[in-house]
Image (cartoon, rainbow, N blue to C red):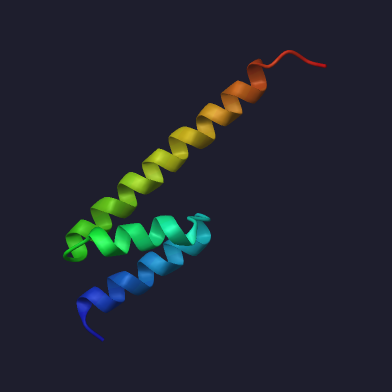
Length: 66
């Protein structure tokens, strides 16, 4: 197993635990050229997901009660 395969396996585990949908993960894999790009892409995806999650939490908190 080479270094890229190890990173790829770790990325697959990351995708499963962060509930990254299959299409998003495929897009990341298709666009990367090496392990460093993979880590950068996954970090960006994780940060974006965290922003969306925080936005949804704040939006829910600020909605008027029914």
